[in-house]
Image (tube, rainbow, N blue to C red; front, side):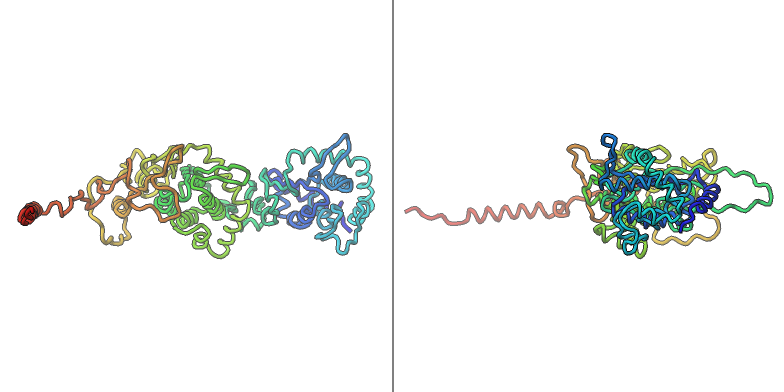
Length: 557
């Protein structure tokens, strides 16, 4: 029924032209007699291996030896001796058809009855047609007599040896549930959440590092996966172009931190939506400030469980929609809101995007994303948040936030390429950079109406001055919680911090300071400064005395 030798030859030829060195390793540790394993092998894995595109970029390794032990030289299986018998047959199938992953998947999926004694949910058996004895199952699944005889001989003579080799692999990889799926070192699914075909396809697409021409069409729909097209052959010699080195911008923050709300929805947002800066920065967001994984899948955050919920949602949004424009819009919407998380997510996303974010949050995928962010942010000491690092240099302090001008100036100073944003001004060594790090010292009259610039080139200074007149002073950073420390402005889910809360304390610009147009000193109370106050007090005193001593005294009897 199956022409395995022909399939082996065909797919061996395909393997020769595939990008083998770039294949994504996928390991599946499973056991016979396990209903979940039965479904997984016969449905998602089978479908994955039947796709020529994914088969070419996937290095699949079956390990049918989960939860096995070797007791005094005797193999012991969770499902008993019959399960061990099934593992011997499967080990021989893998050994005989190891050069053809598609053929192996065919015999384990299209004919999954070979793997499982209980034949529910399989594509192989309808009406229990293959029986319950392993010998009958193998004969049913392998119609070629030569294949059947070779497998029977292998099972009797080499079965235990092959299974013990698989047990060695399983012992290093297996987890507390079966089937246990590992894609390029990362475990998919959980004890309560099955691994679907889409989950495997998406993870393989993201982890593939080979030529983009080998990517299956499915990968085109995966966020963050970009298929590079080959440039046409040049007609004339092309002068090599030096690739500009991008400036790394790392931002670590906490949800519910007033300073973080302001920072992400103002300076960072304006930076990320600017096409000129998009071209020269490598933005690394980390929504994991003050977050630790206390136990597998359980996180602790400085602001409590609700803050952790925000970190999980933002981790999903960042990974699902990685373009800088999307990152800017999504972070601004998620942070600059007073609603609870489920409501603000619905207000920030809609349609398919909303479904993707909710599905990500509800699965272990969100935990894995946050775990990866924590792996980096936990290596960086943050005395305050938001914490910004530009090419290895920290900007801002625990007492003063980073405003737009300081952020862009730090990037401009670090950038050494030729495509400088207009606000950066000339490169060092030429004219002075137009953008200043501090606010202008002379008061600036408020601009009531700004005329639209004409198409001719206009001085950059005017544009920067206009922006400064509109910008508010930065919100004071949130200090990280220490022993005995009490927040001046505790984390909450309320509106962004007011100007008063933002400007009080330390090095932050205070109300009425230089640069605050029309600021005046506080005046004393109008009641205390009233010139009639003293005369009124004197008259009142005289009247009181007159009334007190003018009353006739009672005669003593």
